[in-house]
Amino acid sequence: MPAYAVIVGSGALTLPFDFEPLDVSLRTRYGEASAAPLTGQLGSTKIIMLARHGIPHRIAPHAINYRANLALLQDLGIERIIAVNTVGGIAPEAKTGVLFFPDQIIDYSWGREQSFSDFNKLYHVDFSEPYDQRLRNELLAAATLAQLEVVAGGVYGCTQGPRFETPAEINRMDNDGCAIVGMTGMPEAGLARELAIPYACVCLVVNPAAGRSADSIDLDTLAIVSRSGMERIGRLLVSFFESLEEQN
Image (cartoon, rainbow, N blue to C red; front, top):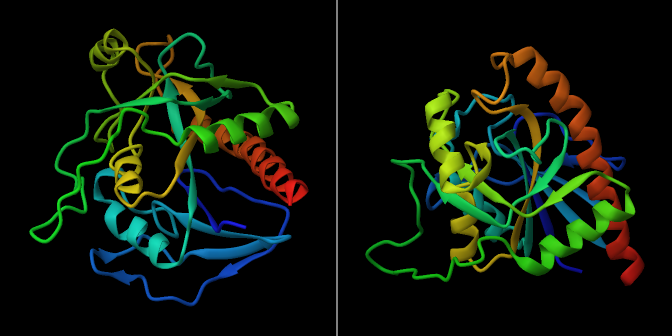
């Protein structure tokens, strides 16, 4: 069975099987990864969990060493990556609480280390489908089995953070075709493509984006929605990994 990584962001994700810290160095050829990965096993499926923002949650989106995180997972033999992201909803279908599976991305971030390319190797990769179609379809099938409300398809707009966007910025993103907005979708997806590791993303919509609601963005409300939504993502992942076991 392939070894899987789940990269988690804001919000605590719990699964009904044990994880323990993996005794590995966080130092990579690209610097230090965000946190010590956790390792667990469901049947014959090996699962590594990595906290994108560190443990405790402390690293801002623009300051994450995405290259080190992906290099560490590659060194651990990870063959498929599931990314979990919390986002704001721009399009009407991106309602608060829904699980959103983007199929495209627009990168508005800047100043981040975007590539593994250096003076020794140049990566030109096809990014016309940013997310691995097969893995994405398997996750959608698992969501159906778990009877979860999802949106299958749409554009993720990745902003710089850590501040939230202005209503004018959200209007521009809406005009560009973005359905959701987050701060960590890139360069993570592009780096996974350079390493040829299949990568798919499931987003939890935790709030309407700026200007899409009469209310201002409230961090306490976001935390409440995130806690309940992470339970649903946990159900999705259990359904996904159990379906893998049934196939083998």
